[in-house]
Image (cartoon, rainbow, N blue to C red; front, side, top):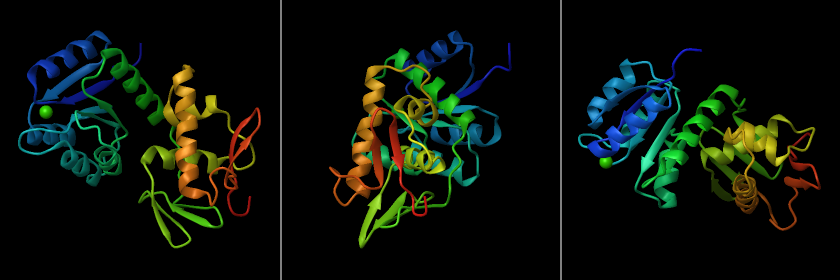
Length: 234
Ligand code: CA
């Protein structure tokens, strides 16, 4: 067996924290934990963890600030936010600060473990990301998660940028939904609900980067094969 993967749990509610530790240990992860913001940040910056589970509402310092400070120190391990907040704005805020995924509370253990496995697999795959993606009429800044469609400012989620980056990396061929699920989402299993996830993200992206989302010219469907991004010069 390989090296044990280590996870830091930053969560102030004792019942949830202890429950998470039990489940993670049962799944053979090495686990450390913190019950306050400052303690969590200290452990995150001094310890070696493969992944961090981060609650948002914490005493002393909230999860957003912890995430921001971890990324400011150039620590790149995946962070999954555990959040009772589920408005899009709050989730996007977390993702912009560098979280890799979020799990809404209350969560099922099964769902959480699948997300952990997926995020770890995705961080191994690594998506090569160009600083900008140029689609001719649309220019996308992948680091700042922003873009410009003529005079219109666009903002993206990190997942949307990863999806675009993966497609931009392979301008020569259509990419199947199964490949996108594996490479962008890290899902090894292909469930119906997850295939729809790809389609939903594609539809959202088209509303942002197409003049007419119903007749896409940048993010095109190749029938029976998948999706292709038409970059400037490809
Ligand atoms: Ca909390």
